[in-house]
Image (cartoon, rainbow, N blue to C red):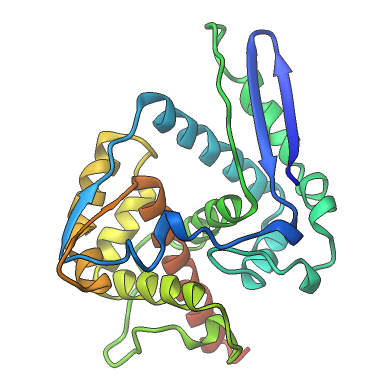
Length: 250
């Protein structure tokens, strides 16, 4: 079952789609083990509409984070790239959209849009919004790239607090940690670029060899800029957050 949240203003329509926690699934077709291979990297082409939709998603996430900073960090600390653990939070998946005022942020975005005849559909799943919030939380806490000290481990063990997780969750976490560990400056540059822009495309291409090396194998891998950006956001936020927590003795 999927819930639809929408707001129509004039000729503009922007909808947000939520997938309840009970239906949260790991979608193997998007970045499954079959695709996490290759020493060669190709960026998946993106349409202008898709690029614009991602820019709008970022603005909604930015608004949401700024209105719920502490709550967003709590959510991030109780989630992973694919899932939010609502049982560890003080609100349910049904309450999440209202508590975080996501429809307010959608409406604010649309009120600021120009008067051109716009018909756009925005789809935000729980996992996507979680990773968009990771980007905003990381950028809020870090003006400069994270500094990785000599001897610091590549993998962030504190991500899962010793708990066993689905193999694909740990695989994605390992890939994100590897990319950030080996290219922290370029990863930071990616999150500072505008989604869908030429600058973003150039940075994704620059990260390509690192992503391919971290994935490891002998086949070409083709990944969307959106997925690369979400993966990098997860990796950068996790390294920043858990390193800070370890430094404070938490």
